[in-house]
Length: 116
Image (cartoon, rainbow, N blue to C red):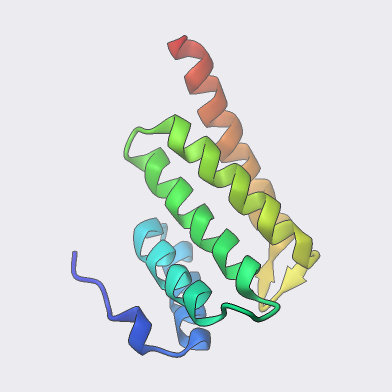
């Protein structure tokens, strides 16, 4: 898979691309685009928002790659960061996204419990 040079794109474009990737369940590129948005937004009010979204993308990537422990860690961190921004922020339905990520985290927790 060839990824774009997200660092060369503006924050808003990275965010738009990441939302498109998320809708298409392409979690790794979503993570990469949001990670660039996070770096680009350092020192702004959106820094933690983009860091949290990046962590959700990485968490889902770990989940799909069979690493439930890594998924739980990243999904938990990402949920904690994005929920600070209220029910909607920058076009993201945070309530719905955090709810879906929470359900994914529960599935991973169940997988980990069975492995013990």
